[in-house]
Amino acid sequence: KAGVTQTPRYLIKTRGQQVTLSCSPISGHRSVSWYQQTPGQGLQFLFEYFSETQRNKGNFPGRFSGRQFSNSRSEMNVSTLELGDSALYLCASSLSQYNEKLFFGSGTQLSVL
Amino acid sequence: ELKVEQNPLFLSMQEGKNYTIYCNYSTTSDRLYWYRQDPGKSLESLFVLLSNGAVKQEGRLMASLDTKARLSTLHITAAVHDLSATYFCAVDMGSSGSRLTFGEGTQLTVNP
Image (spheres, chains in turn blue, yellow):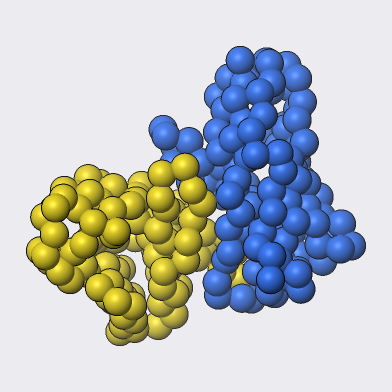
């Protein structure tokens, strides 16, 4: 069974650009959540989706957005990139919205120059 | 605001020794998770603790949860080099298990 797949693995952008990251959950998993990992702030919750609905959102500016499609695949978008957006973005999936265990993808390493 | 604090943040130990990593959190929760992260890799789920007094063991690692003290411990027994990694505890902010607040992580190095 394939794990959580995130694409691309690495991304380099410049300030002011926008970026879209993709996440394909484990087959059958309907809940997808996103986390940002930086050396300074650690791991921080971005948002969570279940059945195409955003259920929770972390404390991030509106430049960060996401969506989930009917096949449970999810995308997150960051507009008007800032240097501080450089981070590892991790996607996690779980079977349901009440599942106990998250399965994380390998992440997308975003560098903003 | 929920805060999760781990102690120590850096741990260097010799093979064969025992040690404990502590995880304190600031608000009531009965769902706590431990994850492992190897350099350049993603997070791997180790333990899910769902109630007060929960204890789980896997190999040389044992995790416990005391919800009244808002404390979880990850005990390492007879450490081996393969356990070198960063260990994170995380507390569920809601009821879904998907909205987690993570600790800072404990970087463990096991030396031969």
